[in-house]
Image (cartoon, rainbow, N blue to C red; front, side, top):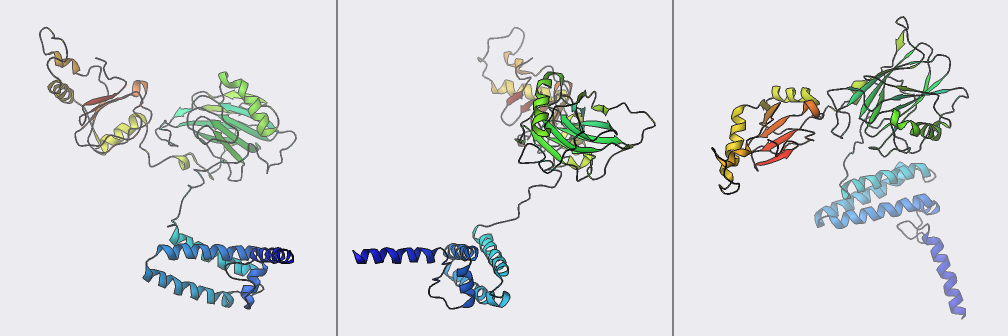
Length: 412
């Protein structure tokens, strides 16, 4: 019984040492540096983490490379006391942090990762609001927006939708202003203001990406959309969404909107009317062009013409239509359809109602915005990969598979 009590006491003592034991036995060390590590919980943990990554990397290497790593590790261990005094825990921690990273880079095959520039991550926040901002007592909240603004020939996100732009003038010199901006389509909000107007914060919301240009870099911005799973959810500013506006504003600013302005043709004046003599200002800290995705083709007809100039597309001709019809006819059995008086029953495959036609000659990304009057007809040349992007309302005839894709398939 006495033995068991003693054993328990010894066990608790061991556990106490293990908590600060690092990767070596703290009870057996006499070196000043190792004693400093054992005395510091964070350093002890770092030493264990470093030893763990060293062992993982060593075990993943060949015998020859493992031996090289051993020599390298011994050199690093000997250099610790030379680089840091034993009473400088901060210096030793940095040594360990650097060594752990060096081992992780090799074991985990780490490479640099870019989350994007400031334009790409603008306004992303973890909370629904501006906790760092002390709002003045008498500030005004103006809301503005529409389903979409003025259509641009570019994209600002990965949705495949054509970007739109709102040009906004804020004229409210009497009181500080917070802006509540909302559009469904991906949009650039290009903001200017009159002398004396002070914009204290901006929230931009919508289904697709929203970005804000023209404001000084220290203006607080919150972007909350469906696409970025924003902390406030999403809505936009239109007549059919008015019931959403005040709850959204109250959650962010603590009070409802003072006035809503609906944009027309991508333009809106917020606050009081502006006269021709009013001087307008904007900031060069962020410009509309900063948010354009230059890796994407131009949108709509401009994107098609750009592809023609680059030799990626050529305009389709009646020969391309006949070629498709003949290939289809030759591939179809004669008894697939009932006989047609006065002709070959297989000729019903001839495409009709073809407009704005192009032949795809090289790898191609379909421009965004090919809807309604801008829809196109594509013929994918044999041997060319299927294009990237969204067809929209367009139609594609694939000479590789002899299949039709899009809205006009089967319509004669």
